[in-house]
Length: 439
Image 1 (cartoon, helix red, strand yellow):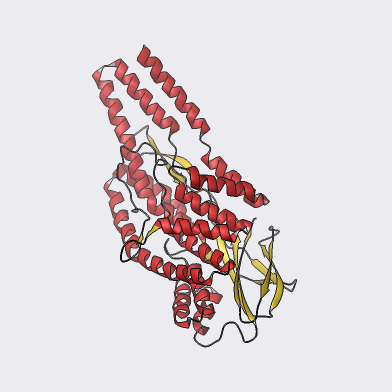
Image 2: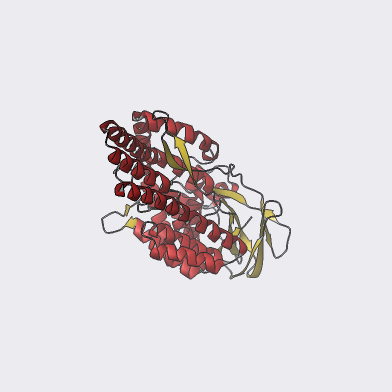
């Protein structure tokens, strides 16, 4: 009887704990604070995640960088992105080694109790965005040398990801079919991601990052490196007119125009889709399900982003990056490992319950039932991802701006919340301004 009471008490505590899980709610509140301009609260949330979290430290670092960046604290943003990048890339060897974990990551499938109790590693698209924002923040702080270092690191990282991470994805997609239960869940749940995924060709290339490195290289006078970066951006997204023009013209023109300044405006749209915990049934094992992260937002389609300088008639930016598509691709690439781990746990639980049921030992049967119920009650999918990213990014640039102080106004979509900034340009200067609309 004492064992029975302890098991029932454990079960009750499990439901209490399940009701106290507030990580998602805290993140949603932080995003709401960013939308409303309550930057201090959002920064406090992100920095607490970076400093106090056991498993989400690296996620907290990029969230802190992004929150500070949106607030205009570029020096703090640069420091946080520098920390996140340094922890994600091991430079102690002859060649830097990127620490992103393997794609499937099915190790300890039956013994890891909850996917949230795993150290968070930045996904390839998140590492590339950390590099992009580090460069922007360094430029905003007039630290061109540091920006150039990260530009060269960004080129190395994207090339390395294509060689190693891309090969791992192909290998993992072949392994999922060896588990009938996992394969069934995987195919059913990833079908809804395909429309959004179609907007990009893989999860580790960031055309805007390639183009941005070209802008910085060109501003530093390194036209050869700039030309290569522009060409890479244009190859990934051939429909972007700015990418195509810069790839074609870098070898023929001086930037900025003589006696003028060059202004680059990068516009982020809103905030990226959030992952949610979904319980999917296992076709082969009746009565059992697995908790997996999923998306439920509609497919993002870039809006018309208008940029106006000093109140003049607006011109339109060019879509340069679909962050939602990259995030959806990343989830699809990791679902085989997530599903396999959870199916293994479910099968282990089913096998243990069947064994004690057959033994006739009622105390053991109740104990195993309670243990399984506790695990089921507190388990949720690992929905962690970089939540303060924009849904997408667009670019606008002119290399014939009159030197002086100018006001930039950006409006996204229909009736969206505008963003604005004031910039002072010197003759021959190239300046990069980042604005995030909040609609």
